[in-house]
Length: 310
Image (cartoon, rainbow, N blue to C red; front, side, top):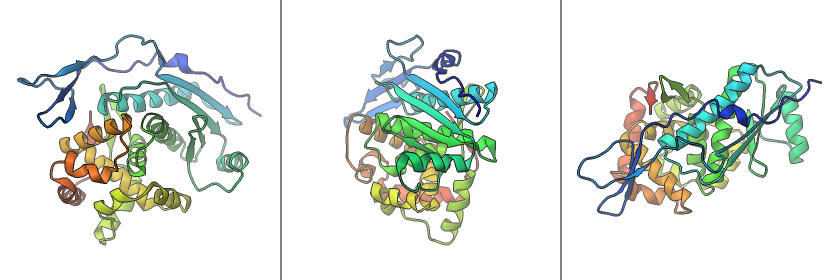
């Protein structure tokens, strides 16, 4: 049996600082709506939310990595820490999350698929659903296994880190938002100092045929799906629902109007607002639910394999 790797890697995080050099501007319009931007707008009174360039009094990160019966190279360990930082940076720089509590991330890496499901059966006391990785909110643990496509293992970790952040900071987020963000974090990279996401190929592969055959769920129905429906779909391995969430988030983040809607939504959730996202569309998305549906359909008809930088 391979000895367990060092459990605590949080010290490595200090070697990979967040690239937070620009100011974030906050202002309230005449309708009382809060806006965030990284651009200074003339003739508008804006509050500057300064970037954190110094060590704060609290720890944003609490990361540990453990591997059982498998070897992770130093390069792979560093990749896990770097990837976790990228996901935090996305929430911090792009969605302007004001982290007010530590979000622990404990990653357990198992040697293969068989060991993964045996571990889950023992922990859950029942047959687990099909998955590449899982996040347990009770103890903030992420469990994954080394896949044949080894790179996919690390993409799965980024997916589950997104769940850890969303569940900790916005526990009332609807599943479409929670899963959609997690799907997009799998594609998250950093190029020349800029964060970049791309169209998730597997999601595109599921959504495009549904769209072609007019079997894609309309946005009104999609946004109103209860979380229980999502959990049922996941237990039964229903991929299209999660794929649509991933592509829908990619669509929203690809336009200023959509990105603004996502930011407003997550900040309302962060403040404890439990209003169903469907009922916020008419207020927070220009054009309302009808405009959102039209823009989504038009976007699907165009090219969806480009990348978005932040």
